[in-house]
Length: 168
Image (cartoon, rainbow, N blue to C red; front, side):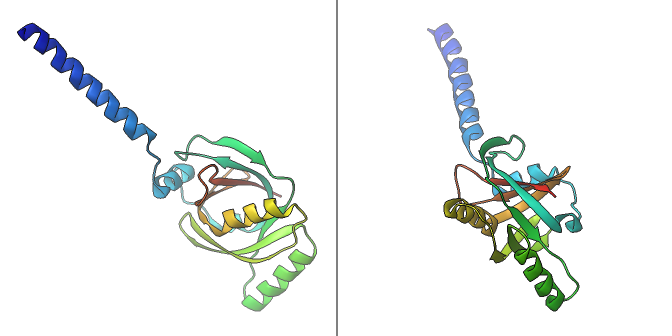
């Protein structure tokens, strides 16, 4: 009897620990941790954001490290302008919108955290896709730049949380 108890108790403890470990792995990471993993804890020069970015695809990550492709985006650009004064910025914004198939946003940054404010759009794509892109940008949480790709992490959609763009 004692021998049976001595065998059963360790097995029970092992199963209990294994069960707890699997539950913890299934839990989604916090936005802060996903953002940290995407940026690989590197400082990003905000000037790298300025310019025209081609919309590539929506993707998904649960941990900020593994990225799964979800859906390609038909065609379009995101323009993040910069000019020294608000008046010059407005003139530059209107010129870019008039001469491109683009969404125009103004951004504010805090490290790799990003807030995008929509300023206009001249996208020539299907309305559902454009709405999806605009909603992702409005819900942007953070970004990472790797090589010539801008990865924007956004919240609000359980099936996709990354918008990937390529520098033009």
